[in-house]
Image (tube, rainbow, N blue to C red; front, side, top):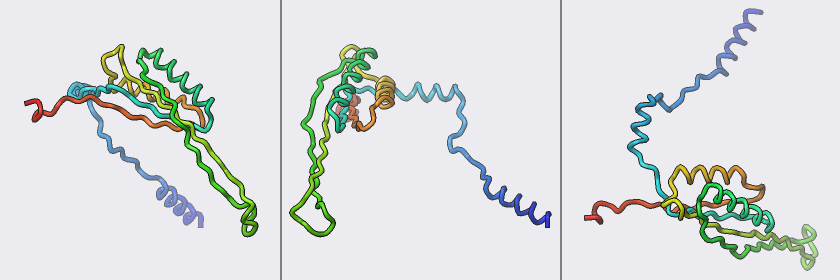
Length: 163
């Protein structure tokens, strides 16, 4: 009986343990530097950040935070727009089935702000600077604030147009 319990325990342990294989092969550092040298960094002429919240004061404080970050990283900020808020009203009956004329109105307002980040000090914002900037501001985003980011990338003209 003890043998049976030991074999069952071993088979259960073996069935739960799985080998994990990684898909990424190991790469030599020299080969990795060659690949990085071949691929140039992307250039962005501007980054447009749109952020939304239900509270105006949260948006105002986050806007000052973004302006301070741009100032410390020496990235010039473009225009700052405060867009009109979105109003959502949902009527609901007070009771479940009857008294149709007694209704409640639930309302939410979403305030929207836009900030354009463009580089006037540096000729163009590189991809590494943009990713560092975005990672920092996304990690410090307040609770209840949503963000949408748009890039304007600079690319060379295709060969068919250049000729």
